[in-house]
Length: 267
Image (cartoon, rainbow, N blue to C red; front, side, top):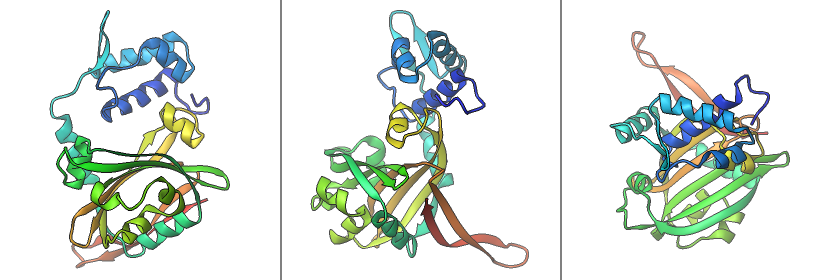
């Protein structure tokens, strides 16, 4: 756990577990107290206090002899979908595409895994696929000279990804590989938020468990408005920043801010 955070350890654990519950990571039940103690490196009383807070909020149900399981609130899927829709912004890739490719060329990437799998429900919905259709899932960690920068998970329809695999993903940015596969990239819908590093992300990005990360979800469309890539990215905020240039447009009574150019900078 991050001793520098002005939060008690139990509350850091509570925040991480709450986030994982919302991400649907514990459908089969939460780890036991001993496993959580080992993961977070804390005493049992600390784990129990975090679990108690989750239980008091109605997020988990603790049953003697049966373990701890999540309580799925009514309408959770609708909430998640509405949240994504309200936060998502349509982004034209003029400039952004070049920026992302340039970043890919100037950093190193380690491919953690590449697998061909049936599309999970949320991925199938995002890519407009049947849940029996195949996709390529790839996990990578991108680094600068200072260390890990980001953890990226991408899902691409099997028909598009058949031309590249682990070797190609280690050598070129995935947007370049998509274009080489014949995809004409059109636009993206992007959600930028924040989340806390769980045990796995803390290890990959060399941060303390509970550290704040910049979370990016990006859905790429081709020029025919077909989804071609679904990306989940977690970035270290001390090594990555996202910049926009904004302009005021419209009549004097109804002026709004619009973005003309996007850039992703790392250091």
